[in-house]
Length: 299
Image (cartoon, rainbow, N blue to C red; front, side, top):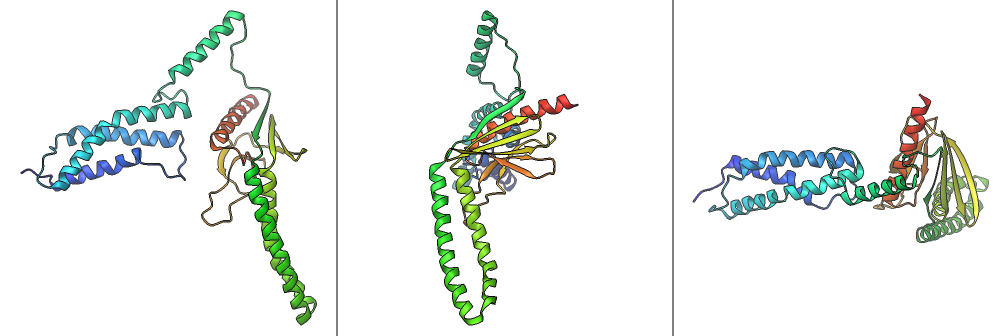
């Protein structure tokens, strides 16, 4: 009976090892974007080039492990075309205009029909970026705000009671030097303050206005609006990144993500903490499109 020699076995295992991530569930920490999809397409193209040679290996072998290895390869190779089509559709969504992407024909037909309708009634058809970009970047998240608020209240109350008894007892024993413990408890009170602040942000409605390089952030909490104005650096695009203002303190907790801009001093400006990931990505795309236009006008 024939068998798979060591070199062919190595090539098959290597091929399947590179193929597996294309169909496995992605890591939750992985960011799926155009660069990630393009890397997958490069791996897939390499697999397609190698598969014809490996296809010549017969699945009829005496060793059951060899049979399973070859049959798994053949099943995987049949999926290459389908996987490539899925990746190219995803690429077109993340990076419209990429020649490797597959355009959404239904969406394109709708846009063409929309332009034809505008032409018939004499409406303008050009795409324009507004002089002032306004958008709502997040809505209140009551569940998240309640959870953070209850946790902050509980920790604060426990720390106050503990500090009262501890400092009181130490004061009776050592006198005024016992009040030095206030600095120790201040560490916990600062964490509680950040938790209350995060709860307020979660319960707030947030809107932004971008006028040139002037960014106005308006957060409305329980009907009371507060505004902060920043001057952003137009040479630095916005990104979705882990929040530095409200980083998770619980072990194993998912990091809070936010849309990040940069001011003229290089300091981060965070918005859209409560927005879902697709909306955060949309906010980034709109802001970066506006920034590109403003930067080009300044040249």
